[in-house]
Length: 170
Image 1: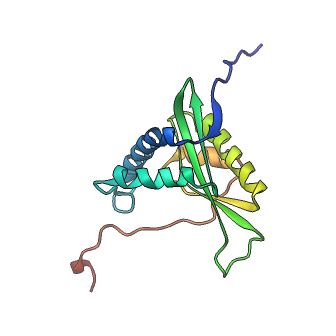
Image 2: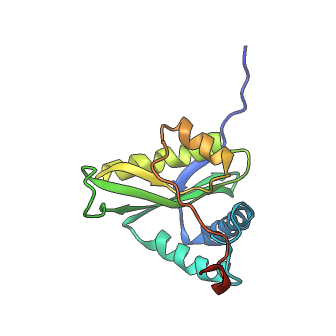
């Protein structure tokens, strides 16, 4: 017989009290991603100071879905989802749930990450979304595996040059 530990983690709406933890998690992920592609993902020197008020505004915006996972009073992940229309050249049939800021602690993408994602998608569907689009780094394998396990598939990739200098252009 299998024994599993009880899930003590909860998914709940993010609050202003979560902004510091969310900002720290986002900063750590930004630094991780900069090792994947050092030009595109290069954090600015004041990235946390710039990102923190943006995250606070997203959490305060009732039109944005912002959730955290929490275990024993500690934030273990977050997702921020915005509902947008599609560009006029596309017609997917409804609104898009755009997820860019989405981080969980290492080793918990298949648990916390999946629960956060599915909770955000469920809320987005109730607000008219017909698809979710999630941004991730190309080498974030744990997150990519969780996205596949949740039924998402790759729709696009961005290819980036190394840092360019005038001498590189004929």
